[in-house]
Figure: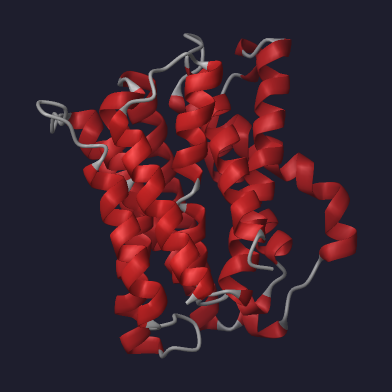
Length: 284
């Protein structure tokens, strides 16, 4: 069970690389990419819904419907913010903002634990401390001299990271009333319908190759989020987030291998610190 989030980190890294490749296409804007991506995720999940569908009656309580509505709102803001930023700015400029997400998740989870108790959000210092260290190491090793430019797209990426974190923490409040795939199916279905109505995307702009790439990305998104939700329910939010911080290490390696990007000393330092923190949390 402890190794499932590591698989999630590997999937996340692969999806990040593919997402970069797709967003390089000039004909794809953030609105079209978001709508097509949610449609792909929904189509991928349809065959599995019959076998893994679960929706408890408590999900229909007014309080939980409101929480689900906030999940949708935060997700819409997060996706649009990040996709706009990635479309308009180089990924190496945005990296310090993007890697804020796990630290935001940990800090929000700690904060929420004081209001909803430790049944949903753990406060085990043997996990929280290495998680915070790993999160800070990830951020600090991404900051370079004259690297951060607090322009519009950098701030959009920060907003995207924050709202993704809010979405994930709010999701944990109601995850027990769904199976992971049921929750993600409903989330993506609502987001697809809203995106389609608001943005009126022109899918004909997508050629066959890009459509297959987006469908492949949908498979990865589904696998990643189902693993995240499973981890939140069975391993805890903070521990799962720590394990998923291995994702950027895989991104470094994949970018070096497939995109021919340089693997510098900062990447190696981040990798060593994060792996050390993960091992401490697992063995402690």
